[in-house]
Image 1 (spheres, rainbow, N blue to C red):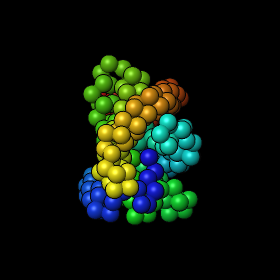
Image 2: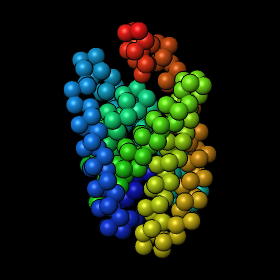
Image 3: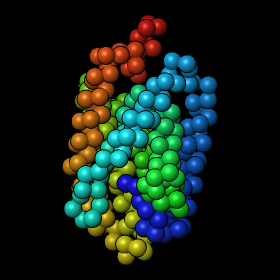
Amino acid sequence: MHIPDGYIDLPLALLFGALAVVVLGVAAKRVNGEISDARAPLLGVVAASIFAAQMLDWPIPGGTSAHFVGGAFAAILLGPHLGALCVATVVTIQALVFGDGGLVVLGANVFNMAVVEVYVGYAFYRLLVPYGEFRAAFAAGWLGITAGALTAALQLGLSSAFQYQLLTTLSIMGVGHLVLGLVEGAITASVYRYLARARPDLRPNAASEVSA
């Protein structure tokens, strides 16, 4: 998921980087003033947890790998806009400090992990939450990371470094993350269930339940 420099053609890197900037700019406006004293520590904990978890990779046949991204998890706990900014910050720090992912393609990596996975994962969570929060969290983590992987595969498959082998990149990244994404779904759902029991006030609908 952390694509190195040289793997994506420059026009594509610039395009997806611009898209990431636009989406995150809108997200920043939407969360303006929403970070209360109670939620600020949660933001830090979520960011630190995602940062540490992203260091663990699982190999995928075909020369790539998968790792826990945490986009859906961040979206569920923080909301999609703040979640997107949280994951974008983590991905940027990893690229600048640890060289995890290229700098030229940083915008593309941010788009895949902080935009696609966060918003797609949150959409599935909201869609499925009437059928159970645990199931919704699982599906959000699983399908969110799969969507992000497919976007990365699209970028790679449309680039000269991979000889424009779009079907190959989509099949390797898509199938690999569809299977190993089950791990992300399980982690997302398990941690969410633990937090829901230990700190029910952190649940996304806790505030509305209290006010009701």
